Image (cartoon, rainbow, N blue to C red):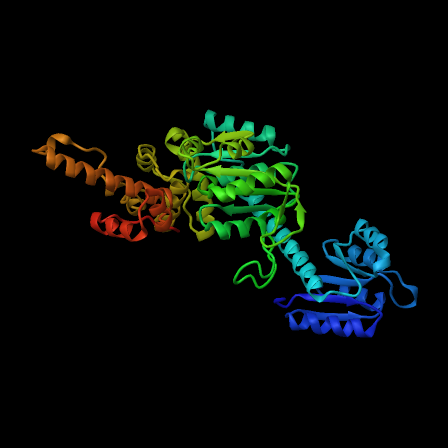
Length: 465
């Protein structure tokens, strides 16, 4: 449906204006229709227009190209679709050179025109979202750069900066919560593709069929439930960056298709026959060692070499403990502003405790801890009382296991199994920020089994706030 978006129709044939108006209104769009450029241009100055459909030849010999130029002068981001006869393909191409978003031939195929309208409106929406996201990132993360003084992490950032203006695929590896997506966004928004879209997809969150559809799009009727054409992430990321998160969880069948697309820079939509060419830069991320998956036959060797032209490995937070005070202060400022609180710092004893903790959930876990602590803080400094709730989870498992406390080997074996199982579950929950489905998948158990073990061990589940 059109969701109240407004289509401007400019055509000197009353029958076409009437027919197109009915078509768009039926699809939920608001419509403004004019026979000439003067009224259309005036409407564009007075009303918010989302997309225009303009005939190449208008009343009195008026040129659609002139109206195209005037509309774009009023709104450079306005998508304009040119309508032309079969004998005027060259003119349509000329219109594209002058800024038209697309063209449609007469006699007009309503279904084809609707597809063009939807596609162009989706591209505009994505650009606006991308622009907003870029602004937010520049005002938050990138105005401060990535928060670190760790030499190892700084070396990774320097390497990323060396390749940010190339088209070379990048593979970012590291544990969950280490900042893989943040680094991917930095590469995009500080590089020469910054004005293009940044499109992300979590490869672990979807079944094989859904992942294929999300990546490559599908045609109407391609499968049950495909009621209309859908653009895939590859198409939406054209001229920009496609971020494939958790690529190690991608099914082998999808891996084969992905490899072909990366080699040919073109693909078919699911259920389609038309070859679509794209210009994208792929940045992939994994929290699982791909070399291990290759040995197990779960990841293609040739795909690994295709996506890992440049490989960046992020260190876990426990290997950059000197960054903990810096990161904590950074998050304090963010959440104090968000919650309008006067929290400005951290008590030394809190810093000491946080430096001694291993942070299995890495920066994401620290961010969550600061978020909660700022909310619970009663003064201007985060103290031990404020972090009592956030440190309770770490106490779910003792710091050590004493074998001498058990009389028999049988008792020792049973206790050790429970201790390490409980510890593994706690750390997996921390790493997934409390996402039980993801935790169960990482641990190789069902969600129901995980729930029973959480209840059995009395584990306090981490907040997902």
